[in-house]
Image (cartoon, rainbow, N blue to C red; front, side):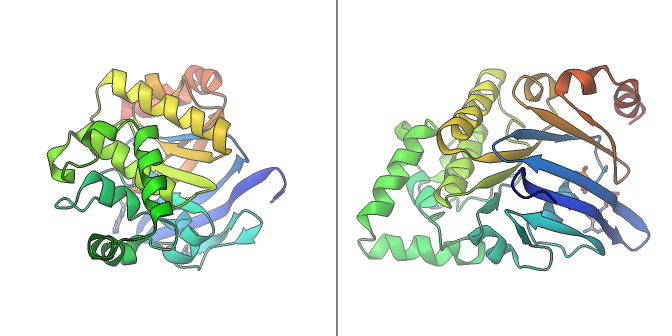
Length: 255
Ligand code: ADP
């Protein structure tokens, strides 16, 4: 893995569930500062690959390198601390806490399993002003200032996606793995989300690997695309090349 060029290298990774070859020898590389799409029909192994990269699963074979370090075998928490942060298809928010508390709870040092403590703590102790200010800036960036004080279960599905993105940004990621950022979101908001992604790349140099089913939107924003089918990468290239690849049309039509 040429770590000066690539922030993420996935090298011949395999992950099986019993007889199911969910990820069956995947090699992919993500250039620093790029926005890369990961597409493929349902069941092709995208989520499993994300879970391997983010440390939720240990691969059965292969290696994952992030920012010059081998990370397969590290815990999700350790990987988060290195600056590789993922979001989930269904936002994992604390629904009875406010948008502000949810976003602030993503502050670096309080990922995943510690999130709840971080948020509850923030309710009773006047927690660091810096964190609060940063959370407000982040909330403004993702366009949620008008609902910052709302409970997370009282905002729209699209706003929940934005809140989750905001929380991920509080972790000061070098790279974000986004699982369907535009799912269930109207086309205008979907484009705003992708425009936000482009701005984050430009202003903060964040690298993105994005699972997204809405190809007509995704292809307008990504530099490069990998296509998965039955646990393997079956095509890759610039969006225009991938869009014209007959194999890609075939797997989507064939299901
Ligand atoms: P995608 O995200 O592309 O829809 P997944 O990674 O979710 O694909 O699934 C790939 C394959 O692995 C599917 O056949 C799915 O049923 C199987 N699979 C995923 N997770 C598990 C699991 N925890 N246990 C057993 N099989 C799984």
